Length: 399
View 1 (cartoon, rainbow, N blue to C red):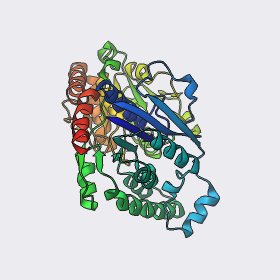
View 2 (view 1 turned 30 degrees about the vertical axis):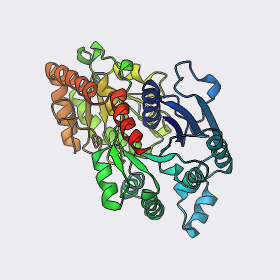
View 3 (view 1 turned 60 degrees about the horizontal axis):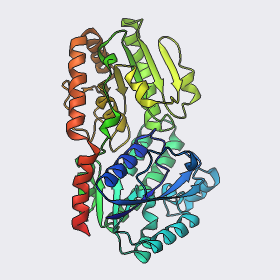
View 4 (view 1 turned 60 degrees about the vertical axis):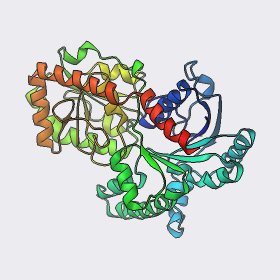
């Protein structure tokens, strides 16, 4: 098949869940014999100089990018109050991208155009006009639901009101687009069931994120003292900030008192000043690290305290693949069919997090067993080639 992949941000470097999800599926497509073209926004927030791409980024026959300044602009955000259009969507509407898409579609006969996220839905009419390709939406999250949860946890009344207003616009748009696709790929059964409940009637399947397992090897540090705890994630994403603050405020002081020599290491892109200010008392703040895999391998326990968000958490998959013990919330493990206390630890309250961490640190043999089972679970269920084969069989039937 000839596949055109549209992305809302350039899928390299592999430092966030979306880039990993996009790139590993594209690599699987290539290994399975399909021909890929990439058309991507290169946004001001995550800009990457494509001249610096490594030789290993070779899964696309051709790559096209369009620069986009999609920062939230106060004036535009204010006037959006008087518009029926979703501000989350209009920030991605760009005439240069439209023209480049037309050019790419006219130049080649694609079988599939795969949209990596709802923000690219405004370009479906152009695809229909200039191509006979089937339109596949890959939904990385229930996008509006992320912002519903963020709004619900926002304490400032005016900000909460504005976020709720934006969410309603966004939700209406996402639902209205459901049946404009020929096929939908959902990250989890839970997401797909929710889409169906909201009115999705088009063909769809669950297609979780797959990892290139050759890049993930467990390290013996998972079972060797001195033990340490880590957090890694994009710290310009509000759910990550909220979860980290909760952990620092309500969990870490109790755990550190019981284990005064224990260190908590924090890493993440765009780390805000307030996180750096929390360094000390066993908290070590690294900012953005050059090698996320190496960082994860240095610390046997990884925490993912999430209370808002949607989709799958790639960092949980990566940490488990590297043989780490992962402690997360029920929301954090959504879409991942892991088994509590067998290959992952799950807590809801601060007291539960404290207790699980204390038990984990006091029982190194049990920690070693959980780490080994975590890696085996990922190998059995989240290989990108196996997932790619399942997807392409359905897409082949579609065309």
